[in-house]
Amino acid sequence: MSYSARAIDGTSKTVAPTYRIDSIAGEAVAHYLTDVIPCPVGGIRPSLGRTELVTITPLSFAGGTVTPGTAFTLRAQVELLKARRHSSQRSPDMPETVGSLLVLGADQSKVSKLLDLRFADALEGRAFSGCYVIQLLPPPVVTVAGNPLLSLPATTTPASPVTLTPLEVDLTEQWVTEGNARRKLGDARIVVDRGEATLDALIADGAFLSILAYGKAANAAELYRVTGRDGTERGITMLPTYHWQIYLTRVGA
Image 1 (cartoon, rainbow, N blue to C red):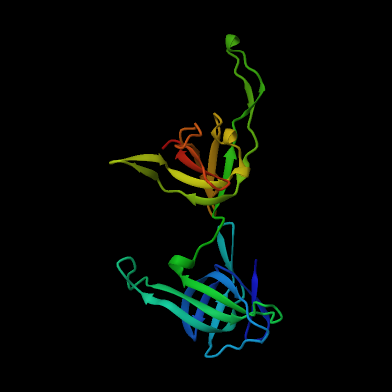
Image 2: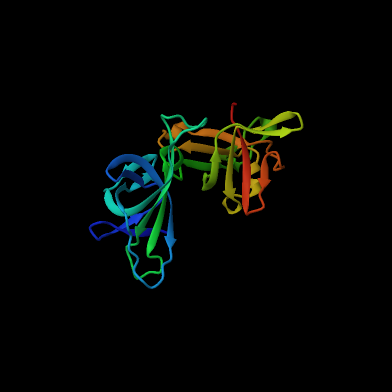
């Protein structure tokens, strides 16, 4: 669901996660919205005090490219929960910043007359969904049976790939600790809705999964197979929710 805030010129502007904050009170920053929370208010029209001018640029992500829109300016009450904080995990060159902006909603006839815009620094907030194209490549379909006695191979036709919409993609090596030892579960892990593909289709002999990162050429896709191919806990886990957790082994790895 999208929400709209009131810009300083009185117009309605959509605000959404991944939008970039370019400046706060005239200071150039590079923070990103991580959440938009509607705040219900009573019958009175709220007014904001001690506001700062905040400039925001809409960002859209498609095909591996981030495209900026037209920047707009809001009046906001600014709360910085962590401002340029560094620690053993964050250096002074990459400080941690977390905060929120309280702004007026564009439609003051709604109960949620205020919007709480949560933001974070680029390391935490610059995140875009749908960064991978994942396809299930079923085994080829035999159209003409072969004859082993005559050394005639079967004629096959490639099956149509099935595009999967992942809820989670982790392309790092997957390990589990068992006592004092570690066992490798795969080279990658994905989580998909069970309605995306059946267990039989995922572990079929000759089936593969193709993972292509947006921005790369189509021939740069990585090929994987389900670890173990047996549908047991080692290869595919049935999560308590309606999802498959699939461990993958890179082909040729």
